Image (cartoon, rainbow, N blue to C red):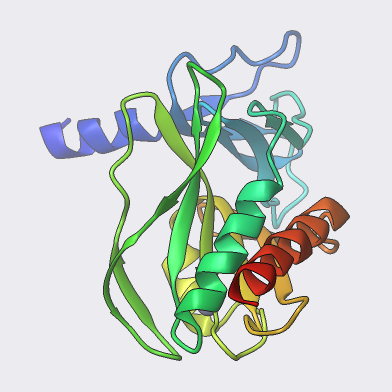
Length: 219
Ligand SMILES: [Zn+2]
C-alpha cells in the first residue's frame, strides 16, 4: 500500500475484538477503532485518560464473529485541585467583558497540575484567538478553559467546532463579573461531547473563595 495510507492507518488502527479473551491493551498513546459484535467503538489512550465509547451500531442484525466491548472511562490523573478553577475565574473576571483562556495541565511525572494561560492574539466579548501555552516535556492538557465575559456559560457553535477533534475537558465560565459565575463543563473526545450535568460543588466553592479574595484586595 502507498506510504501515506500506511501512515494514516498506523496512526488510527482498527482491531477485530476477540471472543475468547480481552482485546490486547494499547501499547502506545493515541486512538484506535475496536470492531466488536456489539458495534464499533473508539478507544482513546492518553497519558491522563483512557476511554472507550461506542460510536456506531450495525444497521443490519448480521452475525459478527467478534467479542463484545463495554464502554469505559479511566481518569489517570487524580487529585484535581479545584483552586485552579478559582484562579481561572479570577483571570476571567479581570479580562471581562473580553474573553480569555487557559489550560489546566498535568505533569505525568510529578502528578502536579498547574494553570497555563494561553497567549492571546485578539479577544473581544464574543471571540478569542490565541496561541496555546508552551508545555513541559511531561505536561499534558487536561482542561481547556475559556470565559464568555458578560455572557452566560454554554457551549456555542464556535466552541463545538473548536472542540470537535480534541481530547480534553472543556470548561466555560460565564457571567464573569457575578459573585458566583456560571460554569459549563464537558468531556470532548474526537467528536464525542459528554456534558457533565453537575459541575463539582468544590469547583463552585473554589471560584467563590478566589473571587472573594479579589474583592477583599480591591477594598
Ligand atoms: Zn465559548
